[in-house]
Every structure is written in structure tokens, then in C-alpha cells.
Image 1 (cartoon, helix red, strand yellow):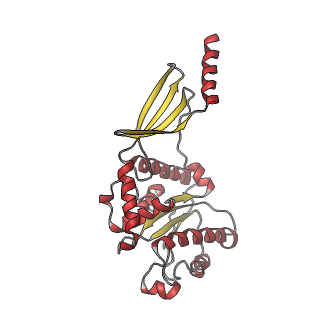
Image 2 (image 1 turned 180 degrees about the vertical axis):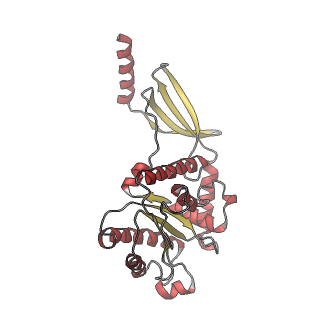
Image 3 (image 1 turned 90 degrees about the horizontal axis):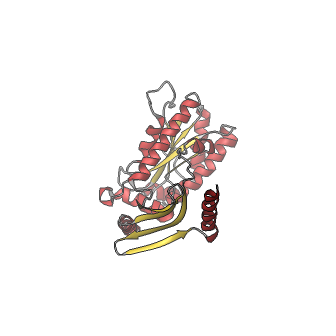
Length: 285
């Protein structure tokens, strides 16, 4: 914890500060022909609103899975070396920051090998990242749902590659579930099954986080690491449905708190003129 105490302190300050902020949006209502100001909670990935939107996306993944005929999903867990004696003996040990980087770059390489040399075809996947909490280290690991059923030799090749990348050991670095998550299993909602691996990563109150969760989330915040991702096809299917409306036009956005406010974005002169032109055109009709 002492090694990352500054990062954790800065992360706590960020959550405390943003918890006091309000997002202020100024819009023009084209129907009522008046300016509207909205005051909304300042939302980031640790906010409950973000958690709810993300959960909705994972339910969309479940809809995609059903629409594809419930294909078999093989669950792969990818773990890196940490900073214990065995890890130091194998690779010199990894700090938690190094572990995040190793996990990302090694998964990128493994994903390309799965496509080009192991499955030998493009494939869909969804991954989530969570911290190791058994000993409260906070080191990251990935859970990857692969929309395919891998043969034994393909699993062995995957484990060997992960070891060759010096990301994690052959025995524990890349682990597969004994059976695929397929339509014959008892998984009623695959999206929620994967969403649960995000754990308490969306908890906004640091007082509710364990030491390992604090270390993990401080690194997510410091370096902007993503906590989940998907192949292009699944990402498209997981987009939320928003109703398009021509009623409102953007004018200004800012943030505020008691005794302080600032504007960070404003409509251009051309955009404001376009609003006036549109209103004049309606008057002439």
C-alpha cells in the first residue's frame, strides 16, 4: 500500500472533488423557443449512473448472444506475475503499474495469435478486468469470453504463448473454464455473468473499497485504463439506444460547485447563427 499511497490519495481527492460538482448544460428549446438550463450530477466511471449504463450494455450483449443462436462461449482468465518471490525469480517481479501494462500488451498479442494462428479466423469476444483481492494486492487480471469452442491443443497453445510473453506462468497465467458457457449450461444471462466480474469497481465511495480495490482503482484512474472491452461486432451490438431529437440545440456546458463555476465548452458563433436562421425560417412559414 505504501508504494501506491500517493496515487491512492490523489484518487480519493478526485472522487471527493467530483462528488461536489454539478454539470450545467445550457440548451435552446426550439419548440418552446426558450433557453433551458439543466443541472446534472457530474458523472464518471465510478458513479452509480455509469454503473447502470454499463449494466444495460452487458444486457445488450446477452441480446446479441441470443440473436446469434447462443454460440458456445469459452471463458479464459489471464493473470500476470506480481511481485512475490516466484515472480521475482521468473521475471524480476512486476509492480502493479507494470502489471497493467503487461496485461494489456500481452492480451493484444494473444488476441492476434488467436485470430491468425490458433482459431485461424476473426472471432468475437468480450473482456472485463478485475483486481486480485485474495491477498488484497489489487493486481489486475482479465476474464475473456470468446465466442468459440477451443480444442485442447488450442488451449495448450494459448497457455504456452502467455508464458512465452513472460506475462504469467504456464500453470496459472492463462486458465480456461472446464466447460464452455453454452446454451446447455445454467447461465441464464451471459452478460450479467460477465458483468459481475467488474466487482466493486464502480463504487464511488472510497471508504467502501478494500485496500486492494483502492490500489486497483487508483491505477485505473491515474492511467485511464479501460475496465472492459469487446470486439467490433459486439461493441456495436452493446451500444445503448438513445432517442434522437431535433428539439434542443446545444449552447453551453460547464461545471459548478458552491461558490465556483466555469464553462468548458460553448457553441460557436456559426452554430448560434444557424439556430437564429432556423427560427427565422420557421417564422416565415
